[in-house]
Length: 118
Length: 106
Image 1 (cartoon, rainbow over the protein chains, first blue to last red):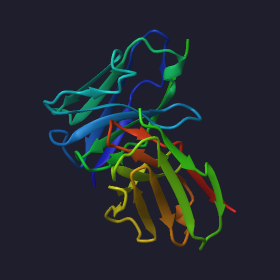
Image 2 (cartoon, each protein chain N blue to C red; image 1 turned 90 degrees about the vertical axis):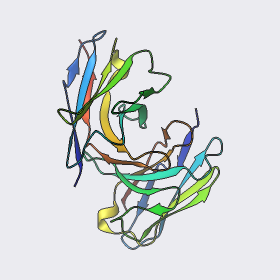
Image 3 (cartoon, one colour; image 1 turned 45 degrees about the horizontal axis):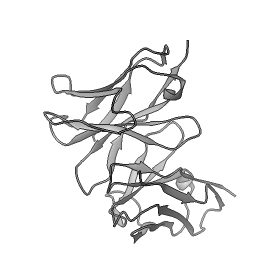
Image 4 (cartoon, rainbow over the protein chains, first blue to last red; image 1 turned 120 degrees about the vertical axis):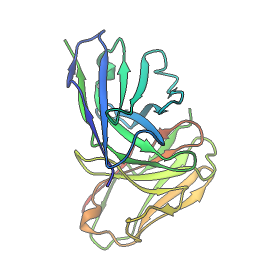
């Protein structure tokens, strides 16, 4: 059974870079698409973007200037970096698999809380 | 952006009840609509995509319908394991999500 698990710092200083990694087990990051999402406290889910191995990443226009995603097939992981963070970036961050056009998202990681604070 | 509006935001129900959650899009998403279930501290779970395609392993008491801008998720007979938050997602134009509907015990 394929599983995804997010990892990374739970606390990031304002103006610094948030970096998260999603480790995939029971499957391979070499195929399909891989996405990042976040849910600020009390708010709905927001897509950060998605990418694929060897493919071009697609970002939410509202975050495009600050987000970078990549895939590491040697570690079976994919990651996201978000620069110049502010308190508004405080959220639970999830990773998820996307099988492609026409399909929903899944499986998902359970999420990791990232707080932006000095 | 396409806005997704769910109603109600909270729903109180009893085991055995028929439950219906609605999701409305700010513009047509055709049939590109998915439903998810999420429990506190757990990963969201895909229940239905393409508006009405039940995912493998999801109980048949869950069903989805609709097209264009109006969609529904129905649980025909609510079970104890179904108390959770449900949210919809459109995927015709990037991805946007509804705010969620919490199904709680009455």
